Every structure is written in structure tokens, then in C-alpha cells.
Image (cartoon, rainbow, N blue to C red; front, side, top):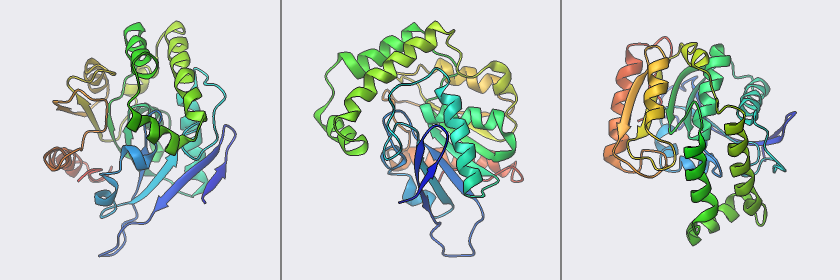
Amino acid sequence: MPFVELPHTTLYYDLFERNITQPASPQTLLLLHGFAGTPGSDFAEQIPHLLSEYSILAPHLHGNGRSSHRHSYTTSYYREDVADMVALLDALQLSRVLVLGFSDGAIVGLLLAALYPQRVTALAIHGAQPTINERDVTAIRHWLLEQPLAAEWQAQLAQLHGEPYWRSLLPMYVKVQEELVVAGGTLITDEELAAIRCPVLVMHGTRDRIVAVEYAYAIHQHIPGSQLLLFNATLHTFVARDEETSDSCGRRHQSQCHSSRQAGRSLLE
């Protein structure tokens, strides 16, 4: 199994080679999953389609999946994840990648593009937020700790992260979100967002119950030249759940990146 030893974690990753029906593309797409997910769970429906265009690098972020378990989170864990991604790219000798991120992975993607612009060709994100407040923590606490978890999701969490570890992961996550609010609530600064220069597609559900759509507007406002694509959705899940949504997302991002081919092609089909 592919692992790499890093300062913060023993990081598991999958590297899927592009399905070659024509000369191989040199482009690699980095998939960044959300909290309590893995690339295989968050992007299951997209991966087969994406492999027709790109090789895919799919790490399990620290504390998730097959990577090292966490005993706690620090309030700098997003930036620690960014450092892990840079170290992984270095270990695999990948100088630049396309990035597709969901939720926490979208925040990591934004920070990666802001702090290491030379490593990111183009970025597509869904469900990101640049700040967090008490309202957000209340929603997260209710989602993870107060309402009964669906039996199906409990089974998935046990499969992805192991029993009983997953049961400690949820309260650890709520605790660090509370600590982030106390620390001021800033996850990525306006200045860092403004420093992103690669093509960026910002996606969000208009009725997302966990991460309010206002955050998508704020991110779009602060990233020069970014594109905003909204979906009529309430669930905090990655957008492309049906053919119509997937096609719409792909056409929009393909159009955006066609005008900036030097910086990167479309991330989605």
C-alpha cells in the first residue's frame, strides 16, 4: 500500500493512472476530501469520469481513512494539511497539479493555491468557507453529536476509519471548530484569497445546511477572476450527484479554463 512518512502523519494515498485511449496527459488532479470522508467516498461518482482525462492523486488527509489516526486537532490543522500535501507532491516529484476540493478539502485547496501558487494549475472547490462562527459550530454540533446518525452513515464511518476510532473523531472535530471560533474564526484571510492567481471555480449549494452559501459569495468576491456556480441543494455533499448536475458543472468550468489554457484545463466533466 502506498504510504509516505510526513512530520504530521503517515499519509496514505492512491495514485490512479489515466485511462489511456490516446497519448497520455501530463496533468495530475489532486482530490481533497471533506471531514470524515476519503476520496473514494466523496468523489466516488466523479473518479471514473475524471480518469478519462487525468491521472488522479487521492490522499487520505491526516486523521481520515488509512492515514494516521488523530488524538486531537490543532487550530492550525488546515495549514498542517497543506504542508502535508506539499510534502506529498515533493515525494512524488509532482511540480504542479490541478486541485478539486470538497468542504474541508476545499479549504485546504484554497490555502494550497494561496500559499504555494506555483504548485496549483487550476482549482475547483465545493462547500468551502473562509471563516467560521458560532452559528456554524451550532450546525456542526447538531449534525455530528446531537441528532442520531443514520445507521448507513455509521456503517460507512466504521468502514472508512475503523471502529471505535470514528466515534472519537466526531467530538474531536466539533471541539476544534469551537476552538477556531474562540481564536477569531479566520480560516483563510481575505489577503490570502486575493493572492490566488490560478483559474478558480467556486461551487456551493444554495441551501447548504452546514456551510452557508454566503461563504461562497465571499470567496468569489475576494479571488480575482474566479467563477461562481451555485446549485439548488440542501445537503452538504459534493455536487455532481446526477448526470444533469455533472454536465452543467463540467461545461461551466470547461468554458472558464478554455480562456486560460496556459493555467489549466477543466477539472470536471
